[in-house]
Image (cartoon, rainbow, N blue to C red; front, side):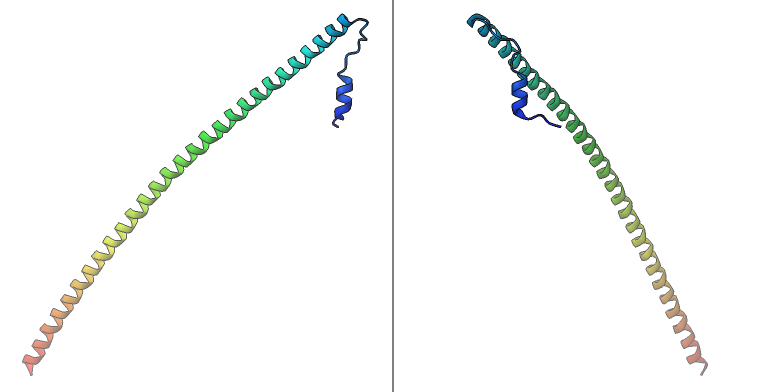
Length: 122
């Protein structure tokens, strides 16, 4: 549970009761020094925390960049395999088409020869 700001301020008031102006000034300066010291520690701890956060962010950024590089490499490899598979498929299809054309020509020659033979026999 958070303390109310008023109770924090009242708690931070000095316990001593000054009996002279010199003592009042001394208490004020020592308490003011404590406040400055706490303020500087607060800024110092904030700076340390910011450095830690920045270091963590930098590490995450580097890991993500490394992952992206790896993904790009995998993508390039997959693209290369894909293109090779397509080339192989196209070459196979071309060979099959050539073979079918050869079969068609052979059938045509066979047909013409048999047609000629049957025509000559009549």
